[in-house]
Image 1 (cartoon, rainbow, N blue to C red):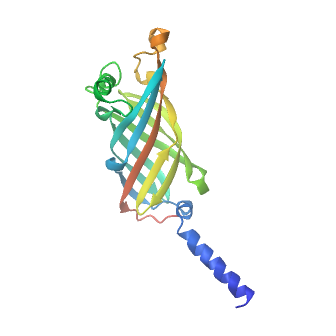
Image 2 (cartoon, rainbow, N blue to C red):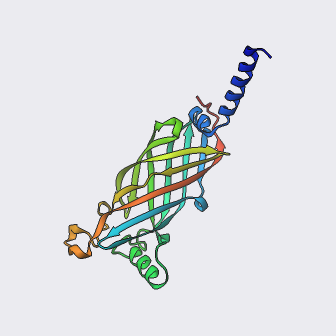
Length: 215
């Protein structure tokens, strides 16, 4: 085999291998169409701190959708089930007590506001080779809406888009969740941080392929 033939075979093999990699697939664009968020594999992790400690837990994502046009995410939303907020660092009575308090009017008042919502505004690439993007949207909790932005890794495999955010901070007082906050004059040794951190993991399954061609 001469050198030209050998290098041609190697180059062809490399191109074929790259074409099946997740990075190449995403660089070429996501599969255009409509996607439905899978509640069974989507979740929001939260953590909050207070003087002398803190807690962490999860909140379930109960639904949502994504729209991909010409290989790009152009629209999306998610519904967050606030009645399902739980602590994962506690057990027994202390776990029940914290979860009950978080659901009360002191915090998220889930009897009155059982759902929170996220509406996507834009998704812009940061590093396509690493599948990282800047996600911007609007978060609504207790009927108050504020803009939020965070970095996320977004991939697609077998008709499922996975979006996993970095941990980012949200100021709870922007939503009127003021219990234990310094804005209501809470004693220093009883303060709960105004900021809580969240990490979003969301999976959305392709429902229908768009007739629009990807570019």
